[in-house]
Structure formats: structure tokens, C-alpha cells
Image (cartoon, rainbow, N blue to C red; front, side, top):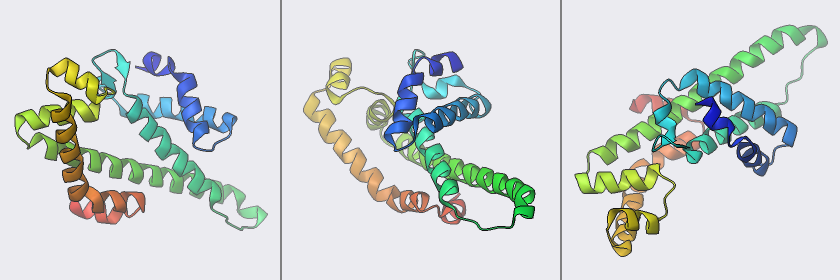
Length: 187
């Protein structure tokens, strides 16, 4: 899995620099992403398309979350005496790690809730929504591969997005506002 991730190393670094990060820090964030993927993802099929290509959206979301965590921690201004440095560093690392874990738990809650909802739909809708949301394919490519008209796919996807937005907008806002207690209560 790490070999496949590393094939797109420059793309990952460019993604993070595009978020407003310096290149050397972006390199560090990408390296951390590799370690996190290796540590947390036991089944590499979860981040692969057709056993060949890495799910770039999944990696982007992971990098975005890591960048946001980095920026939050970086922008915290704490004043302390010089003697407290060692204790602060340990506490600081623990707080950042706890925040990362909560952020990942919130992300996994949202994605699993959405996937559970999609799986409860009619098989046609569930399969089409799964293809659309999990692949990098355009609507035109999906139409060509499935034999379903482009208009039908466009209308279906528009409806899926509307339904999911209505159902999960509050959870998504809680996630963006770092209100993890609200998400934990729903679990």
C-alpha cells in the first residue's frame, strides 16, 4: 500500500501546499500521512479503486484533516515560563494527539453513517451512488460503463446529493465546528 501511495508523492505534497502550507512543512505532513495510513488501515482495499489506483479523495481528506490539525495547534498561542517547557511539550503532544483522534473518529462516523444510509436504498440507487461517490469517474464515464443514460445518472446523483445533504447537514456542521460531543451522542 505504501508503494502505491508513494507513486503520487508529488501530488500529495502539491495538495498540501495548495492548502497554504510551506513546502517543507507539506513534506512533513505527507510523511505523517504515510505513517498514519500504514498504522490505521489494515485492509488496503479500503483506499483503492479496482485494486489499482489510490482513492485520491480519501487521501486528500486525510491530508486536509492533518493540515487543519497542524494549523490549529500552530495558531494556539500559549504563554509559559521557560522552566515549564518540558512539561508543556508533553502536554501539547497529548492534546494534539487527542484532537487528531477525535477528528478521525468524527470523520469515520460521518462516512459510515452516509454509507449505511446509501446501503439501505434500492439496489439500483445504492449501486449507482456507490459508483459515483467512491470512484473518480465522471458522470459521462459512469454512463458509458453502465449503459445508463447521462441524463438519468445526472438526475439521480442530483437527488442523492440533496437527500444526503438534508440528512447529514447537522452532523457535517458539527464535524466542521469540532463539536465531537454531538457526534458521539449520535453514535
